[in-house]
Amino acid sequence: MDEIQRPAPLENLRPAGQFFILLGIALILMVVFSFLGVAVATAYTHLSVFDLQGTAKINNPEVIRALKIIQAISVVGSFIIPTFIMALLCSRKWLEFLNIKGKFKVSTFLLGGILILVAVPVINYLSEVNSHLQLPASMQSAQDWIKNMDDENNIISNAFIAHQSLRGLIVNIFIMGFLAAVSEELFFRAGMQNIIIRGSGNIHVGVWLTAIIFSAIHLEFFGFLPRMLMGAYLGYLFVWSKSIWPSIFAHFLNNSVIVYISYLEDRNMLPKKIEDIGNQSSQISYVIGSTILVAVLMFAIYKIEHRKTDTLQA
Image (tube, rainbow, N blue to C red):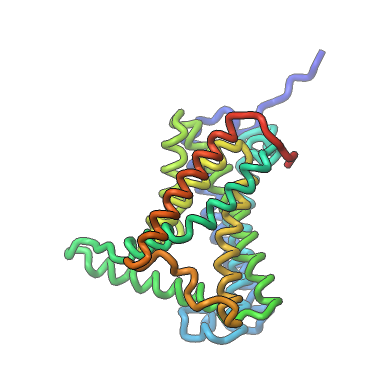
């Protein structure tokens, strides 16, 4: 007689409960690993905690090195570990729960990455539109605070990728490309989105609500719209492919291309600000062409996922 396997501790908990437990675990570990990251960074660089506050010393290479260490440790603790803990608590088959184990279609994998590249003009255009959004006059102080926070985030991000050596390029692609893609796709798509879809019974609710949370958690108001749409695309890519790997690859490609373009620009191998294509009114033809290509590729991916084709085992 086969032994009856006990369910995972939270397997029978309602999705709403799983959702808030996932957030709770993430928040707790975010605090823990943020402190751990600061401790490791200050020990490694011999800087004080005060040296890492604000952007006054952002041009100091040791400060940049410390901030990269903090970011790497924080994303692992805030997103990857909570997702795996939640999967183990919610399912005996935790790899299947996260859509890590299984087959994905090679064509979807490749087209999903290509779409991210051809979407650059329309994403830049939406970023420009988003940057001109205004809150009501009664919320002017809030808008000033948001703008200052966005400016500070941009200063730090630009400092990360400014004047990169080859070694710095590799480190940045690992932290800003690979780690960010793996951690955020696991947490938001494989974890949060799956739970919301099961709870709502509606794929679109799960995809768009997760995309909104995904964009909001980055705390960049003036980049909210393009990041939300990218999150929705990654969400549909995950749902259609039934695998986490295509969305991880697309996310990785999006982040890494930005880092690599900056590297090439510093060496005058590309025109300055080539990544700004589409954010000027004179370049609307690029935006229209980009939008059409994005629509065609999304339709192609959708159709591919509804017929048999080549697959790879994850």
